[in-house]
Length: 264
Image 1 (cartoon, rainbow, N blue to C red):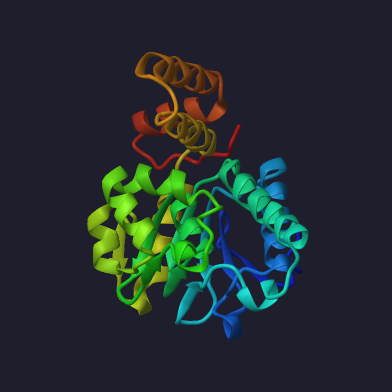
Image 2: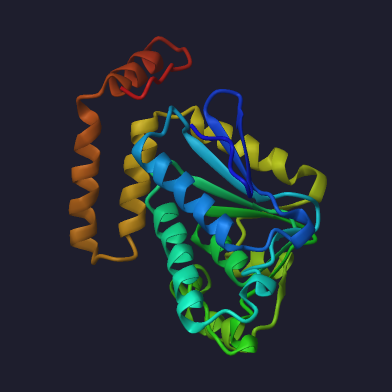
């Protein structure tokens, strides 16, 4: 796996968890073209080969910002064509993240505005520090969310809350994000990463094929009617019947020991 990204800090935690850190702290981890390329390439590579990574944590460098959104200094004086070219890279970064088979947990360590907020919403679920603030500020700049915000937000908070939040461009606190359903948990800043790692380790201890198949099935739950969604679930379920991990899980239960899952 590549670890030499210009705008990302990548490190493996223990054996099965990957920590991905947006690493432009002097720019509030704002999303520039290079970060878009780095994220696109990272997610694409993890789609092809997970290298036994069973859970991923996405967070920001420093203690002030997860990601301040698009780098408006870089965007200053861009032509329309240059703007759309850059945005196509951001679109690929979002779409490839959605396709990563392993769960992605966002650990929001500060401000998450614009595209940064959309990466929080696009993750499988998110924890936030108590001093986090989130906003989709695009309408205050003459644009609108373009990294999935209009799709992710109503799925997380409901359509009426989503309209108020997005159309005003006003920020919400960590407590509000928890109440609305954007965050699953809020933590003291010093405990945020530890709490995310604890959950990631728990996920990584489960059967990896089961986790990947369950994630696929959960993702289609908001896209299909109940009967077709259930049909998809059964197809995903049947993938596991012949696996070694399924037999290991049953054996471990009956032998009263912890299972050792190998992803086979």
